[in-house]
Length: 87
Figure 1: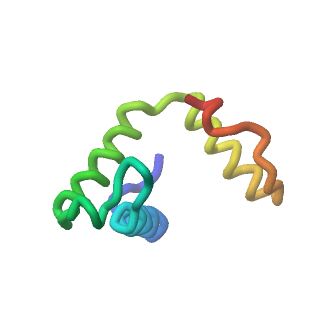
Figure 2: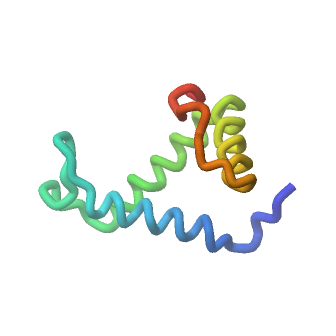
């Protein structure tokens, strides 16, 4: 089992990237600037997204991402399946 008592730079970077992406997000359904998203609201959205991922984990989804990680580690940049196949 992994040791989750020590912070992970990868996880911290991924969460920071998600925060930045949402903070600058705009599409036809949602625009962060237009809704005046506050910092605490942004953090709560990220928390809820992480909870949603956790609540909906499946073996198929985990296996799909593990397959991608191992293919990339082996130098294979082509993804044979799509993430939609994992849901």
